[in-house]
Image 1 (tube, one colour):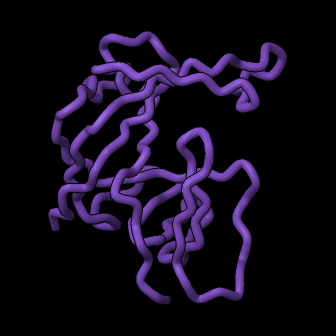
Image 2: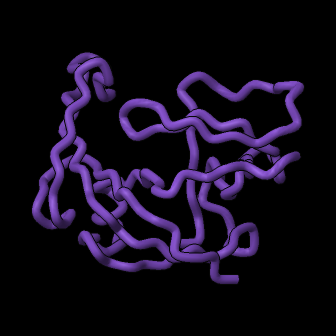
Length: 151
């Protein structure tokens, strides 16, 4: 696989339940270490014949990636598109430790579809805030720059 050009800023989704489970609130300008980036796909994964990695920025702070599968089991999948990501939280030995700087934060205020309880992405709404403490949202997007990988 060829080298991929990575975005200068990553959109890391930081759900409110993560804070409720004990992770700290985050603030603009903060630097933090994180070892796992999770991914999900509403459309499922597809096998492609390309042998290159790519990252395409999509609306609503999402990405479309072409990645190499580096681990696969019945319980989890780890892909590498220049940054490793998993479907489940896996032991730290699957990942490098990454240091991130929070450049800005968007509170996700997207209304939910009442009958099925999922966000109505056709009506996506975000508001910039200085800290996850200052917003009462179901989730946040941390717009971060990777400072470096800490092995």
